[in-house]
Length: 88
Image 1 (cartoon, helix red, strand yellow):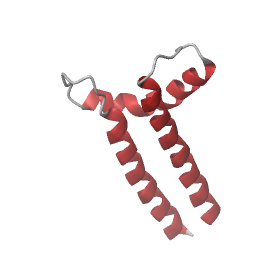
Image 2 (cartoon, helix red, strand yellow):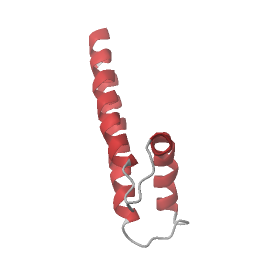
Image 3 (tube, one colour):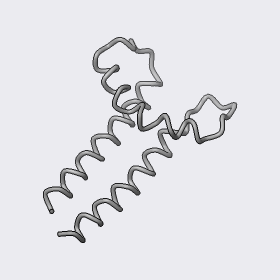
């Protein structure tokens, strides 16, 4: 079970870093057709889209959904790892 917990932790960590990369990329001009950019967007969009639908629109040019998504992902990761460790 320890191995499964490590795999879950790594998966969530990679997803968090991809979301952070997406935030940083959004601050600079970039080619959306670049394979690396497409990969990051294809992995992170299914995670971020539900938060965008739930959160109210603001007049600010800032998208808060990645911040909320990272916080929720950290909570889910913590709960899931605790559950896995209790099983083992």
